[in-house]
Length: 342
Image (cartoon, rainbow, N blue to C red; front, side):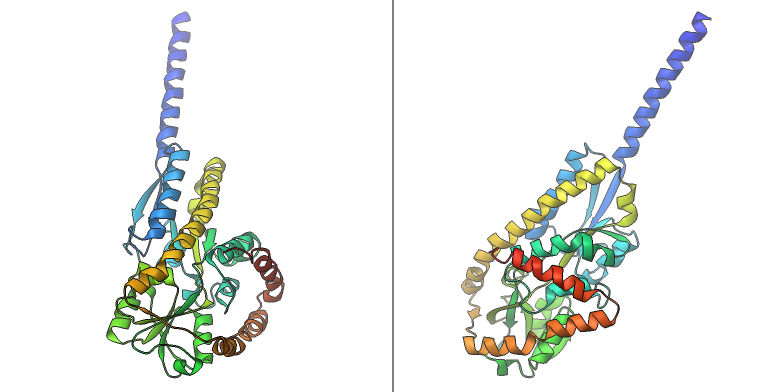
């Protein structure tokens, strides 16, 4: 009898050890595919996304690992959201304005003169994620959002120094609101994805584009362009998310690790754009890109022309069944709250 009990104990011990080992293997095999349409050399990739992934891996003790697919290996810039939604990628960054009508409230960040800095825009957007923005990003877990500094006008050959200079200019737009802005000031709008802007400027497909200084230098758009007018009137909104099923498969402890790493990533993205923004204009000048003055009186005319888009946008979204008016109350409150962020 004593021998039988000993054998049972040994067998039970082996079973427990085997179950523990298998459990560890299962956890170690939580591999998330990270997809990026830009290269791993991109400063946001290096300064924000790489630390985000490494922290999640380390703090989960290797239970979560990442496979990285950069430079559009899994899909183009316009395909990133669908890659996430359909589970072909587990985590990625996408541009909501590239999918017209899909993320109506997220478009608010692209309204003219919505933000004065990358810090303000990023903090405002993330304050509204849980209550307002996440619900419209279907089948994904919206982790955080950010925006670079507001954009001006990057152009080739023809400088934009007044309202009349927009007349008939072939301008690239990246979203519905940007298109409305350009049409209001008389430009002819051409849709070109960000990775193709360099070639479009070089070949004359477009004569100009709405672009911020940091993205201009990051993509070396100062090479085909000749002028930059720092109007700072429009912002691009970016979203970072996980496939919802991939998120749901994580344990509560793992989800907490990801959430904590995300908060640090928000701080990193603000710092990255703030620091890079201080040097980007100098880089553009050194590349012989002409910085064009847009006189105060012309700026007033520009503002007067495009600011009515706020009311138009709100009424249109409300008529389409989106709670735009209630959202704008919180949006305005957040803008005021972070108005002093440089």
